[in-house]
Length: 282
Image (cartoon, rainbow, N blue to C red; front, side):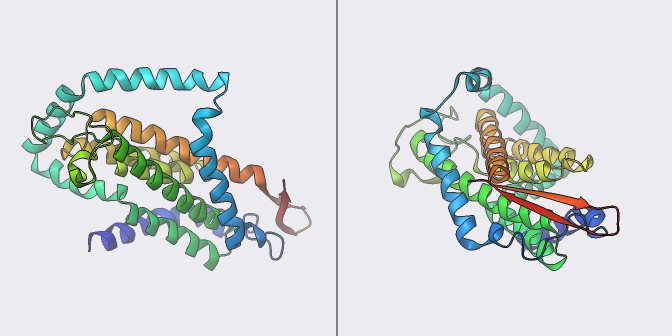
């Protein structure tokens, strides 16, 4: 029921994203030109390439990568040091405000993987129905980003074995390579809801970056999901921070790699004809 409410509530957002381009023809799917772009073999091939890049990234770091990696690690370490006091303050504030608690219970659903897959499906269906390339591309790339995020967070949680808030002494200890029977109570790091929310938010925000309100809305909602996980005592602040950084990185990578392979350019001749030019790089 909660899933249905989340998807139904997201319909106006998807409609607003595409309302301007639906009325025009310069963002439509060009018949016959880009069929291979969204074929199952092509999608699967791109997804596998991206998955390889994700897991090989630590071994292929370049000098410029450390310009982002070092500040990210430093920020994570700082937040982790203050995990407990930050978490306690946010949790107490949430518990004292019933309306805020209800809000967090609702907004956290936007980080549920199944809900995000539903949102991606709505974009894809809308793209097919209205022959809108950008919507279809957004749906497919969002699905891929959620898939990658799910695998990354599963491996990371299993390796880290971090205690969730309110478990035992509420210290958030790491039990690396914890026993499988430790269950969800030792799967706090990083936040799965946050990485899922940020991965799909980044894809949508990047695809619709020319529609100014879309990126602001996407990143605000993704941030709200992260805060809700802390407020509901499901994660530590550092879990959420790492989840957001990973989700953002995966979302950007998926869009960037796709654009490197398929470059779709709408055109208008000025003589009443319009369409889409598709160039392929191998």
